[in-house]
Length: 89
Image (tube, rainbow, N blue to C red; front, side):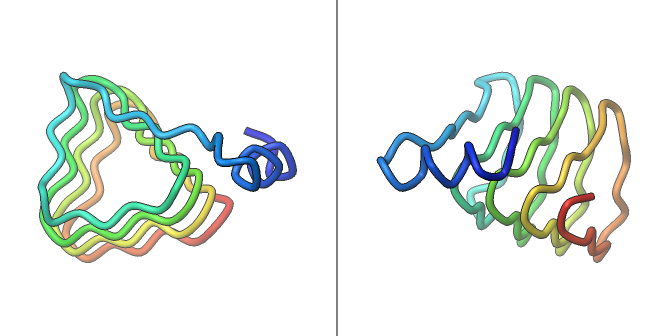
């Protein structure tokens, strides 16, 4: 999503925020506004995700990973525990 569009929507209280019911997301995950977590995704404990993050279909995000703002984790990707993904990646 375009960064300016995201900020504009956020300022009017209309940022996207979607967690698909077929995704598995630990209750100990910290997620910023604008998340999109697609089906068959697994996001483990103590993961921290920034604003406007996309977790595409089927990836596994290991415990203690950090995804900064505007990160896209591609379909079926695997992030081992403790990985840090920089912003706009």
